[in-house]
Amino acid sequence: MDTLALLHASQLVTLAGPTRPRVGKELSDLGIIRDGGILIRDGRIESVGPSDEIERNLTGLTSQVSGAAKDLDVVDLSGRVALPGFVDAHTHLVFGGNRLDDFERRARGETYEQIAKAGGGIWSSVQKTRTASEEELFQLAKKRVDWFLKCGTTTLEAKSGYGLTLDDELKILRVMRRLNDETRLEVVPTFLGAHAVPRETVADEYVDLVINEMLPRVAQEKLAEFCDVFCERGYFEIEQSRKILTAAKKLGLKSRGHVDQLSNSGGAKLMAELGATTADHLEKTDEQGIAALKSANVQPVLLPGSVYALGSKEYPPAREMISADLAVVLATDFNPGSSPTPSMPMVLSLACTQMKMSPAEAITAATINAAYSLNRGDKIGSLESSKLANVAVFDCEDYRELAYWFGILQTHSVYVRGERV
Image (cartoon, rainbow, N blue to C red; front, side, top):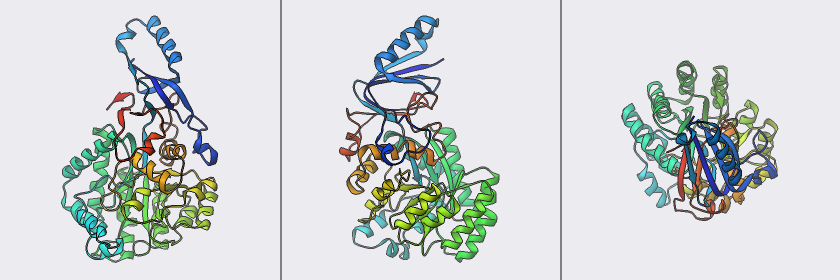
C-alpha cells in the first residue's frame, strides 16, 4: 500500500464537523489542528491529528509491516498552511476563444446589455465555440485545468452553454468527460443549454428544442449530473425556466439556476419552488427570495468575481444570507466574459472585502459547503478519515493570509487523491 504523511503544517484546516453543509456560526469553525499532520493511504485520508501523533503511528506502521518503509513518503510542510482542495461550484470551463473586445468595451463604459446587442457577450463565445473542434476545445480546457490546480482547486463544476445546438452542446459535455479521464481535476458536468436564445430561433421554439432533443440525449449518454438555466429577462423567463428544469428532473438531472443576477425577477423563489440544489448569482435577491431559499434548503452560490469584473458595486447580500442560516457557497464563475479568473483565493479576498464575510466563513463556503452543493460532501471538502486526500498547501502560516494577500500565487503544493500534481 502507498502511504503518504504530510507533517508539521502550521495550521491543518480540517473543516471537521457535522456531515452536512455548515450554517450560521458553524461557518467560522474550521477545525484547525496546529502543527498538524495527515496520514494518507491509497489516496484516502486514514487519520489527521497533531504531527507527533501521526509520527508515532508511522513508527508503529513501519515496524509491523515488512517493506512498508519503501512505500512510505514523509513530507515536512515546514510550517505552511494545509487545507482541503478548493471546490469551485460554478464555472464555465469549456469555451473557444476569449472576450477581449468585451473587456475593452466595458472599460470604455458600455454595459453588459449594450455589449450583447453589439454582437459581444455570450453570443461571441458561442460563435467561437461552435467553430472549434472537440480536440481544440479539449486542449484549451486542459490548459485551464492547470490554472485551477495551481490555485489550489481540486474539484469544480463546469457548465455547457456555449454551443446552443444539440451537437455543440454534446461536444462541450464530451470534452468535460475527457477532462475527467485525462486530467487530475475532478469535473462535475452541468448542462446549460438554456444559457441564451440562439439568434436563429425564437425563445419558445428553442425551449422546445432543449426539452425534446437536448435533454434526452444528455441523459441518455449520461453527460451531466445537473441542469442549469439562465433565468433572466431577455434570456429565459420564469415559466420557460420552470418547464426546462421540470423536464430535466424527470430525466434524473438535479437543478441549478443562474438567477436574480441582472434583475430581481423571482428566480430565487423559482429555485425554491423546484427544490433546486443551488441558486447562483443572487445579486438582486431580496428578503423574500432569501426566505424562500431557506424554506427549501437551497444553497446560494455567490460569485463576487463576476460582480468585480463587470465593474458593478452590487454584491450578493452574503451577511443577510448567513444570518438566515443559509449554507453559503463561494465560486469563481470562471468564464470568458464576466469572470475570467480561476483563482479561489482571489474570490476569498473579494468575499471578505466586498461582502464582509470573515476569512473563516469564506474558507468554509469554498470547501465543505461547496462540496455538499455538488453532492460530494461525503467524499471531499474536509480533511477527515476516509475522505479523498485532496489537499492544498500554501506558503503562509495563517489561513487568513489567503484572503489578505491578493494578486500573488501562494500555492506551494497540491495533492489529488494523495498524489502531488
